[in-house]
Figure (cartoon, helix red, strand yellow):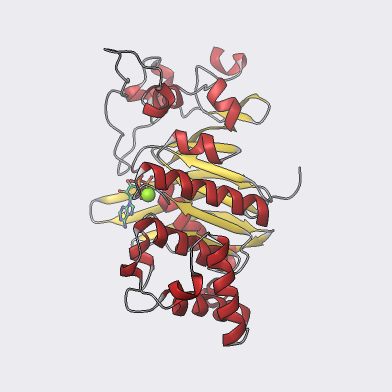
Length: 332
Ligand SMILES: Nc1ncnc2c1ncn2[C@@H]1O[C@H](COP(=O)(O)OP(=O)(O)OP(=O)(O)O)[C@@H](O)[C@H]1O
Ligand SMILES: [Mg+2]
């Protein structure tokens, strides 16, 4: 296999709070290949955003800390870099798009000003060249009348337009990796589809590796090649997207699929989507063994005492479950 663009090994990020240690991300290993789109999916609170903030080294300190692991961008360990070196990486080699663009756009600066600032900070080009690059980027994200938009302020644009601006900004410096954390959940469904199509198109055309974070498996199906399912801070399943949808192995993944409305367009009258019973365990004092055991219909005594290892159950398909792993594992 080629060296991945981004390699995360045994990442653990914890929050040291007055109530105790929140194990937000626990021993997460994953990678993103060149030009690949990786989806990270899981319920609210499972550690998706903390994973992406860890990669950007933007975990809220002093309570939040990366306590273990390595994060390598083309072999370079980001955790060993100084804050100054990291500032060079953010927005340049790795960029990020957040759920709500108004929190990342500055309301008192024009769109042009913000785009130009990003481009000049990392590219060292003249103001005129940066302006041209900014207009080209707006054109690339299909914003009509880009010269006019450059002079406008965020509040003058619709939510969909603002998210396009964020995408333009994120791609402006040709990043190697783009992390999009729930980039479309604040948008209505038709705009969401347009934004996802735009991101996919740019990802393919520019060859950028994308990490798409979402709680929506439907979004993953449309946009990603590979997917990681997280549960309570841990990776529980990883597979190529088609394989995951055809052969989900982890009971949690199966539960997620059964609860997704768009995967059930054919539901007849009276049929209901199934929700996963029970609650996500607290990450303050997570139970031993499999963290999903308390909600799992197949759980046995072993599941509540021993953490299931990730096991390759098919080509590029990994599952952490005592009852869907390789036969030898199940027999233990
Ligand atoms: N600053 C913080 N202090 C303490 N705990 C935190 C902090 N930030 C996040 N957490 C905890 O870390 C865990 C993971 O949070 P995270 O934001 O990564 O979830 P998520 O998967 O992105 O959820 P969502 O889908 O709601 O965005 C949660 O239990 C959350 O409460
Ligand atoms: Mg989040």
